[in-house]
Amino acid sequence: MEAIVEFFKHIESYHRAGILAGGIALFWLIENVKPAANFAYKKWSHAAINFVFTGTTILVNFVLAFLLLEAANLTRKYDFGLLHVLPEIPLWLYTFVGIFLLDFFGAYLAHFTQHKLAPLWRFHIIHHTDVYLDTTSANRHHPGESVIRFLFTVFGVLLLGTPMWMVFLYQSLSVVFSQFNHANISLPRKLENVLNKLFVTPDFHKVHHHMYLPHTDSNYGNIFSTWDYVFGTYMHLAPGQIDFGLDTHPNKNDHSTLRNLLIIPFQKKRQAK
Ligand SMILES: [Zn+2]
Image (cartoon, rainbow, N blue to C red; front, side):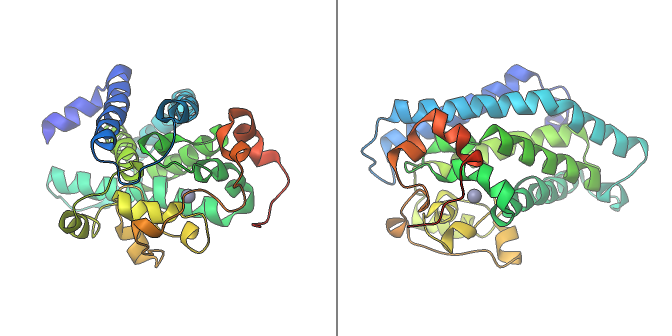
């Protein structure tokens, strides 16, 4: 455990890039061997758009990183945040609690809020317009959404008093989990039934990408499924019943051109047809 802490204390940018690229490569490979859905799509041209958004997400995180550092330093300096008032517990438990709680602020709450506040939803639409959900969809976030998510993570770090090494560990786990739960794969049924009790699996998350309400407004979690069970936002839908995309943006031009995806937040509000 100490070795993990040391690694994330001194993690280099190229290590972080390696984790991101390695995750995509791994799940892409598994998708090729055993896809859950047989999409009739050009995988590389579909990926190209999502890679552009992955790039802008990295850029936003890089430019704003100083805010996270400031937040973590501030809480350390003033001994502030929930993690500072924990009793003496083993390092692994401290890490688990920290990641678990940061997943609430950085993922569940950020995501839930984007679905409930109209101005934020406009940015999140881009993520939901993907009709071919695969591992590259994980970071298909409008730059505006990347900023929103980032600020929620900063808020979480301030409230929790998360040390910087734990923030880096969380971000790495978060990226890989997102690639995993968006991947076009299904786990063996028995493993799925055990794993989704605590973690967000592909079958668990894909319900969220069903194009119709109320399922679009369910299963917001990224790493831990617990938050959806606790707050009553969990829904089940069998993988074969899921139609990916968004009923307000069903046309090809809505979801397959970069220019249109970038301006969606500024277009007139649409109703589902
Ligand atoms: Zn969503």
